[in-house]
Amino acid sequence: MGDFAARPEHVIGDEAALRALFPETHTLAALKSQPFLDAHAQAFIRRSPFLCLGTQSATGRADVSPRGDPVGFVRILDAHTLAIPDRPGNNRLDSLVNIIANPSVGLLFLIPGFDDTLRVNGQASVVTDPVLLESMRVNDRLPRVAIVVRVEEAFLHCAKAFRRAHLWDPSHFQDRAEMASLMQILLDQTTGAPDDAAAMRKLDEDLEADYKTSMY
Image (cartoon, rainbow, N blue to C red):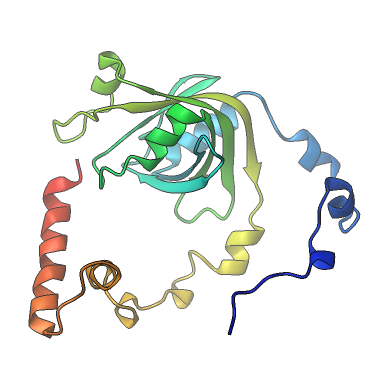
């Protein structure tokens, strides 16, 4: 089977053709976007332990990265500015490199158990301000940098996607053991995973042990 390619007549090429397929935007949906963080947006951010960060490279290549920490880890500096600590990761630095090349970012804040989400769009910069980094200290460790976002747009997103997905419903949770482990997947995709089950189990255990010492 060859790679899928949509027939040209089935590809929408302009906004007018796209909008012709959908009803008019509801008035509230059109008006809900705010150019700052109002009291409701700030309350949502203070409860959130997790967000997805969307960035683009200088050439327009898109990337989305998860960011998580204790509840309220994102600092609200003022109604137009927030700051996200950059915790230890794999040092690919995809998001940070993208921000330096193209500061436009999109954030999606999640709260466990909430079906609605908060979307924030703005312009980001990578900063090393020592006072700001000190406020983000966890387990006596400071982030090397923080992502500061100047907010251009903020609005709550409705619950439909999460309810379709049954995301927080335990009866829809899947067993992680039904898939290969993260370590096995990484090895399969790179240098090759060992055939010996005991050796593979040891690698999985080593990764879990590493999590305990490298979170911050």
